[in-house]
Image 1 (cartoon, rainbow, N blue to C red):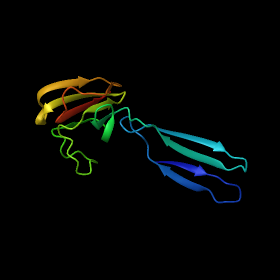
Image 2 (image 1 turned 90 degrees about the vertical axis):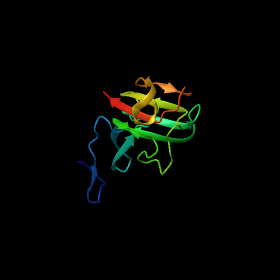
Image 3 (image 1 turned 45 degrees about the vertical axis):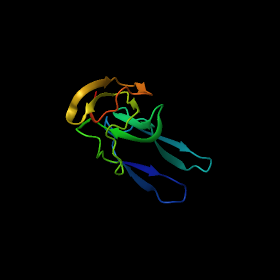
Amino acid sequence: MKNYRLISPGLAATILSLPIMTACQPNTLTTSTTNTSGTVLVQNTTKADNPCSVHLWDGKNFTDSDITINGAGRYSNLRTLPGANNKDWGDEADSLKVGSAATVKAYKEENFKGSSVTYNPGTQHPKVSEEPSSLEIVCK
């Protein structure tokens, strides 16, 4: 954790603890500014896209329900993805976007079987030819 101070004239300093980010987590930008009363403001902004991720949509052209898988990993089935709130993503992803540091290999069948398609870093696919049932995500 890194500590940042929020300093305001006449008030005690407040220490904020923020996690240190790794290459496969969203980029966090930390900026500080001073307002007209002399207060130093620390603001953290998370970039919208994690470079080590794949974003899936249930509809073509990036529509309908969606989920982002962050970080490298192997998913032998998409029925029980972490953070999917019990939605079965097996054979459901109709469109996807790949983070700038990720390469995604999508398999037609579970357990990395059947035909496969490799999606390169930073690419967008508004209509995938075959909805995946298992995935491998490799990050650089």
